[in-house]
Image (tube, rainbow, N blue to C red; front, side):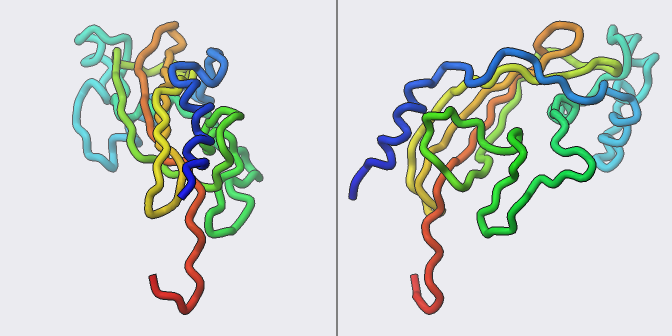
Length: 194
């Protein structure tokens, strides 16, 4: 069996450590809002005055109500769609969203893949974010690329790192996430037993 498919990932491996995008901040469309924090907390039944009471938060040294760390990804996310648009334009078995921010951010020299899924995510939180701040994402550093054949297909486990920045001018968190980017094995024909 040839390993040419693995070799096709070498240009990606060679770029480990590089930022794959500009360092410009892509700002979220909305400020962190007290109402959005409440709506985030209600179904989770979190009960902490720092997330609900401005006076309590300020007494603890914060500028305003504190956003839960688990909400920062939502508050930093770019707009995914606009009214009248669609995220998916095909109904195929392995259809992928056509919106760029939902597709894997592989470099141009990566082999073509038709599928991907998330494998892991981790956050490093550097400081609390409060009501009134605007968050954005900056950079996309390639951290790892490991070619692998799995039961779903041939591809690579690829890891990226992104910074979340505040309108106050600092980095508030770092996110690392992994994807398996692959080409699916062919569907078995009807009537065959695997």
